[in-house]
Length: 293
Image 1 (cartoon, one colour):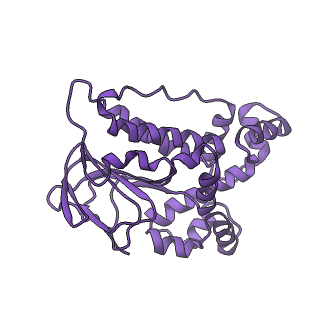
Image 2 (tube, one colour):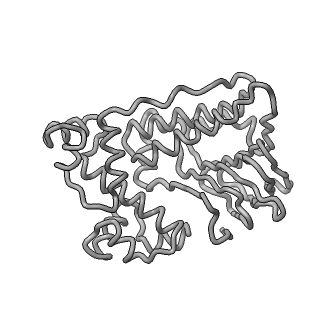
């Protein structure tokens, strides 16, 4: 596989789910139907280019928000522009890139699942999300953000299952364009969500179970039991998982050295950080940086 990319795109973001989480998704009765493995957004992605001679292991959705780009698939070149999308099937050769003069801004999702085949009718061709009085483009982008933000909040079964349904809704919104309506309101934050937001705000500080419990007004034991019941993870395990997710972002989108990331996120030393990272992601920080930078 050949991959070329610019030094970075201002405002870019991406989440690459750990291999153990993807294995869980492939086995869970809900998520195995349709699930995200990679997700991101590249704004004004000048010099963006990918070529995969063997294809990717997942289906890839590219949604052009603005600007222009191109896709080569099945010996044909397609030109994408504003509010057009394209789905590349798994394991098939392809290449794509941004237009040099007017580079695209794209939402992209890699996905798998037993239900992926139901979108075969819109795979391998330009999907034109045409203008109308009820286009609801912003609603679709909000739906993408629901997927991204829930994954950003961690990999609890509920988050993964919810994002699977959101992905189905997102893909359905470009297959059944006339039927597409507004999305549900963003769900109200509960105690567990409040604690997760607190964790995210303190990934570079040292906080304890007692700090988390105090923030939401519970005793440590009551809070831990509630959190475990709702997420299937202990609060500290979840907190450490979010740290690794932040580390992934630093490795992919910053110039910080591995030891700098380790100390920034409160690990004893780079060795401790590397062990924790590899346990979660299946590869070392150095390998991750080489693969996804």
